Image 1: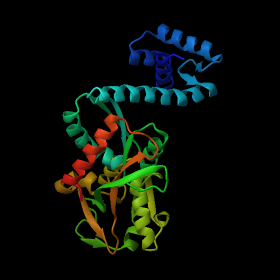
Image 2: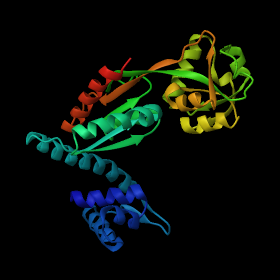
Image 3: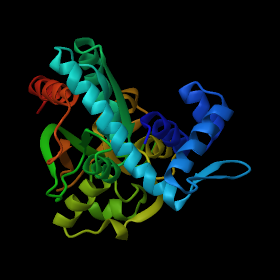
Image 4: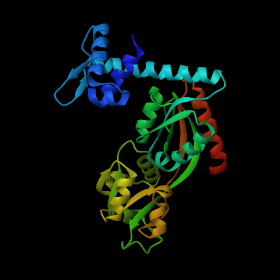
Length: 301
């Protein structure tokens, strides 16, 4: 089975298009089609359904795609290991971050890491905590940084920075001049929540449970899939929310939002460096982990 054909096959599946896959690998659409046809002849069945507007994998194609991703990742790992053997750390490194670390922490870390290891090509994937954990466990990601602990024994998690979530309201809100409100008051106010799978939501739920409250009994006006969407919604008076201090610091300083304490409740959490326990890290991954842990010594709390 030809690795180059598998690479092209993955691009077709992931883009849903022969022409888009061709643009990615710098081949014409007929050449891409020829490679896929050769691969199908080798396998002995159709792998891609050619529909009028897109290309979709068949069941056999979905099965092959999962194996092809692992084979291509192993190829990259081999190339990186051989480069390290020769004294050079280079090659691709795919890492993931949940919303807050992925936007507000990892880009800074990657900037410093890239200066020290310029031949490593870092790709940063963003997702909610659940997605990043699943992709790290499956081997799609070598390293993840998330905002919640997992009970999965197949993962190793090391604490990094501490974060504090805060109740935020828009400027001009009746609470904007208050320093503190009660949980009962928050429970009645229109509230904007993150989606299930979010580390932010999990932290809020655990903190509320300790006080005998259930977030599902809040007056949830909307549920949104990103911190940025919630931040904009709060500023547009859709409701109040509980968000990371890192995410709203600029708005707090500019007076667009106000942060208020909730009496008797703490929403502190840590971000965790997450990696698969039984996966041998590539040299690039080991270098990044060491760099991140060193960075933590300077910036951690």
